[in-house]
Image (cartoon, rainbow, N blue to C red):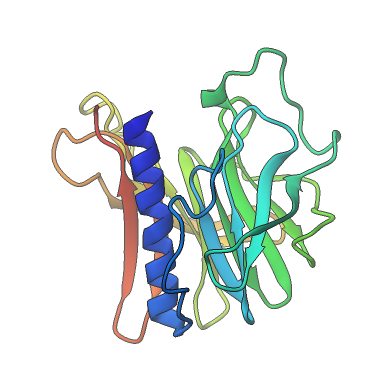
Length: 234
């Protein structure tokens, strides 16, 4: 658990530095660590105007997908949950945390907030949307033919949206134990429908490496890059 806390703290601090450096908004000079104490793993952050919004994994707990907002990436206020209605999703009795909700991504595009995440114990990956991050959030759009975990959304300048996830789509997943990679496909995020052909982008970070996870696609002036938070055997 100590290793997990250290990794989660490092991830949140990395997000803080990444967003601050890229958007020119400086964080306070001093702050307490962890920034958001309590049970808030796998943070994903987006900025809309001068406000940052964060969503976290919630595993087998309900309501699920807690959402916070902040002006400085240090002081956070909980404003709601992405899963807040009992008819949105069924939590099976005795649901294990490894089969619950984890590794969500929150994004904003043209007036709509999107959360995309995985529930292994149900149908896999899904999207919910809202005009206001406080809610209400939509019913779930389950994404058909989207194997794997840790999905993320990326909009290109031409308006096309792409799904990026951790998984193997070319049938080589049994080449070695725990083999995993990153794949991408165009998606209609308002219907949860994949478009065109999927592309296998990577097979992890090395031969015989296990469980590439948490891919995110970013674009800057010079290049498009895939960021992959990897988990290794511990």
